Every structure is written in C-alpha cells, then in structure tokens.
Image (cartoon, rainbow, N blue to C red; front, side, top):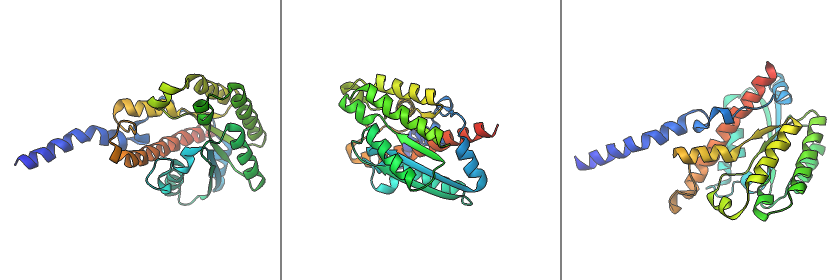
Length: 245
C-alpha cells in the first residue's frame, strides 16, 4: 500500500511538468513566438519544395545531448517531415564550436554557392558573448549577412543566445542580446528569442538543464533541444501564416 501511494504521489507531482511539456511549443509564451512574414518559406511550402539551412556554433551540432539525433536542427527537421510528409524538404546543418558570426557567414555564403535556400536559421552571438568580442564586429557581420540574404529573396531567422545562469554570471550578455534583436528588426528578419523562452521554461519548471541532477543532464538537454525545435516550428508557422495574409 505504501509503495502504491508513493508511486501515485510521484505521478501527481510530475503532472504539471508533463502538461507544460505536452503543450504546443512545450508551453513557450505565445508572445515570444510571433514572427514577421516568412514569404520565401511560405512560397516554398506552397510549391511543395522547401530548403532550409541551419547554421551556428556548438548548439547546432548537439552539444550536451545524448546523441547527434537529439540536436534541435535534427529534431526540427523530423517535426517538419512528420507534419508535412508530402513536402520535398531539404534540410542542411552547418556549424562548429566557437564559430564567430563572420565565420558562420562564410559558411552560409559557401552553402549558397551550392544551391538555393528558402530559409536560413542563424544561431549566432554566443561566441562573441562568451569571449567578450567587439559588439561592432558582431553587428556588422550579422547585419551585412541579413541584407544579402534579403537581397536574394531568402528568409532569415536569427536565433538568440541560450539562457544560462552560469553565462550570465560570467559575461555581460544583455548588450549582445539587444544587438541581435535590433539588428534582426532593422533587416526585417525574424528573431527567435531563445534566451527568454528558455528562461520561461526554467521558471515554470518545464525544462532546466543547469538544475537537473548530473546523471540526468544529457536527458534534460535532449528534452530542451526537442522543446526548442517545437517552439521554433511554431515560430516558423506563424511567419508563414503572416506571409499568407
């Protein structure tokens, strides 16, 4: 009886977290998932062919997850294929740990020489914030890159910094966050506020890698990446719907 009661109590305590994770976008605040029109993406979907390029530093390659398939770009691709099996989807991922915005833009340019993309998801700014690199260099590289993507008729979504108590305690992250948000708005690009979304999840107890037990951190990182992919899918959907209005 005592054992059954303990199991029931554990299940009840787990229900709020399970409910939050099961909600669309793992319960990410809807006001953080509003995107500007993603016209090239909407056109690609309408024609049945969509090409997406995800570029960044460590997180695009699955840093901290249990296996590469758990990284958010791979999860996002899986979600898109699951939801639109009729779509001819090409999804490519480029990145490496410690890459700066200028180095990431070089990756994007090289990829563009090899084919056409409808949407570029650019996870940027982490290296600059961690190293305290000049803000002007970050803004220049990202701003010029967004202008060139727009000139080619390619949608762009900037993915901001991760929420991290450790990073915040050891680096002045807010100026970098503000710079990315303003640069995206100036260029008419999307800005996916990863920091604010992750902080909301941490405060709600939905997912929090830093405060999970050490032996559960890889599993929690997997969960975080899945939630990021789900929230980003909603962000892209909002941009497509905006483009169709």
